[in-house]
Amino acid sequence: MERCYLYEHQNYLYTQPSFFRQGLTDRSKSLWGGWTFKTKNQNIWFSGDSGNGTHFKEIGERLGPFNFGFMENGQYNEKWHQIHMFPEESIQAALEAKVRKVMPVHWAGFALAQHDWTEPADRFQEAASKNNLDVSFPKLGEICSIEDLNNKPWWS
Image 1 (cartoon, one colour):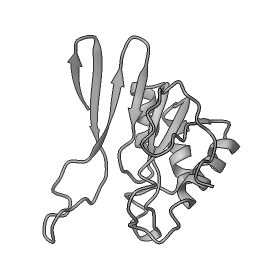
Image 2 (cartoon, one colour):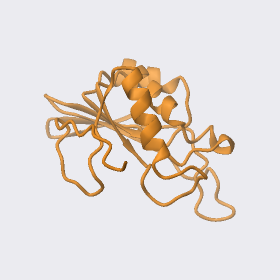
Image 3 (cartoon, one colour):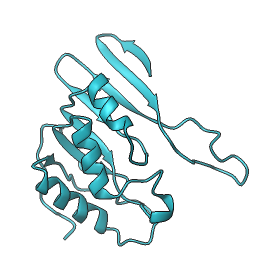
Image 4 (cartoon, one colour):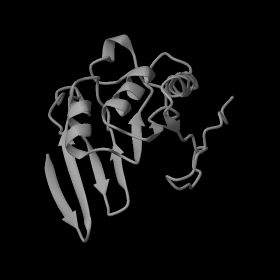
């Protein structure tokens, strides 16, 4: 993990598994990762794209707990399971990383996978509810604070 200080903030970038490519011959030649942003009052985590694994527990132990987490959600498929989590796994990863409130990202964009565009949000919300985890679903393009609790399914 690389650490950098910006004024009174601590930032970490860590690498994680990904098979990212932009062309036919450059698979796995890019560094992929997630990041944290820590201030005196907040500790925020962006999970990045990742498959499920023990690294989430390590992130929580080394850098958590987190007030807020942006969790990868959507564009999943059994064939890509090692690099894109299913919604239930995203919630489990958030719990292992010690996240108090989560917002799913990566779910309402262009379609890479065969699921309906609302399925990731529905499954994420259901899994968060079962695990008593606060969730935020701002409308697309909405400006909000991490303190806001936008937990209504606006897409339904």
